[in-house]
Image 1 (cartoon, rainbow, N blue to C red):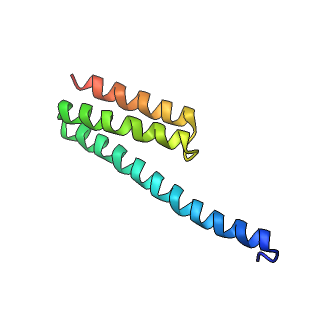
Image 2: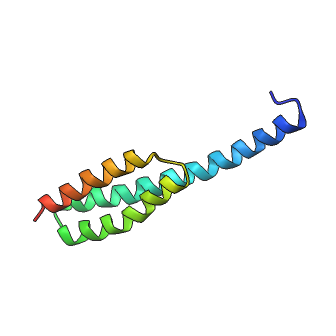
Length: 87
């Protein structure tokens, strides 16, 4: 348990940051799920629209430090290739 005032403050900051990062990850997963559902339904227009909406959200996760840059690049590459294959 935190004893010094500094460690107590850091514990509070960590809790707040954890909640923010958790919300960001959840939001990104929601956007990814919408893309997956559009791909599964076979509707290419909806899949393209969902992918366009998901890309900036994923990159925002990179800039905020929630996800690694290469992880997002890999996910975007695989999703876009799956959407292209629907044509």
